Length: 372
Image (cartoon, rainbow, N blue to C red; front, side):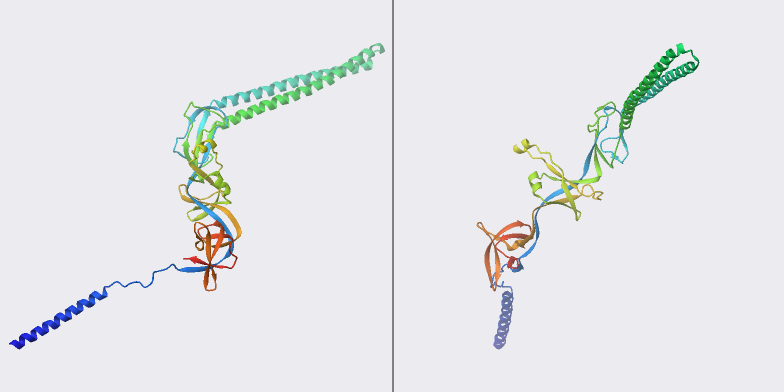
């Protein structure tokens, strides 16, 4: 019995030893290894090359419609307003009419007719008088043939006087007709002006768009040439962005808009600047740009990016921008010389996110380290 107890203790001791031994191995696997060397920055190399380069400044923009300002050519009073703010209009839609304009055209046309009739009557009467004088002259010539000698002298005097009278009458008729023509042309211009006024008394939309503002309703007085309607031209997009100073715009050699993945050439609209307000720190809110191409299918309301290209340099010596390092005193690169990298101070010019112009310090073909 004593032997059995001893054997059992030995077995239990062996099992306990194996269990403890297994637990120890599991703990060893979970130990975190130590890094022998810290992770460094990988460096690459690039040659110094030549290319055209420009600095780029980007602005967030929105595609908005061109605002068209419409006015009556003639002054008058609104007879009927055909549209309201917010209405969509098509090209050729009637916007408003002026009242009372057609009366002037009718009066001018009536006066022109009366002048023509009066001229025709006056000219006819003058021609009749000349015919009478010519007939009298012919009668005297007939009498001259059969008249006694003592009467011929008097008859010849009569013929001579009538001849002079006829010349004067014809001259007066010619002058009369010239004056009539001047009067007719003046009245015809008045008729044309009045007719144009009638035509201009109806204002039509020249575009497809949306009415932003209108003049007052019926009975409201308008002045010729003064804006009566503002319409958003949905077929002519433009760009709106935060205010860009004229000085920045002047530096740019090229203006580009990126809309829905496409590039478009643009031009800034002229900005009216209140210099006194700027001196007080009050700047305009926005700047606007026009697309240089026409008939663009760009949806109104689209988001866009405006890029201003400045400091353009042709055939510039460049390196990747991340090859250039800076501190408070200088800019420098690391040039590959054999197995060594040599710190080289440089002078830079135009820079973009990708490339930087090297003005001094490097030559074409040099190889520099690039921070990856």
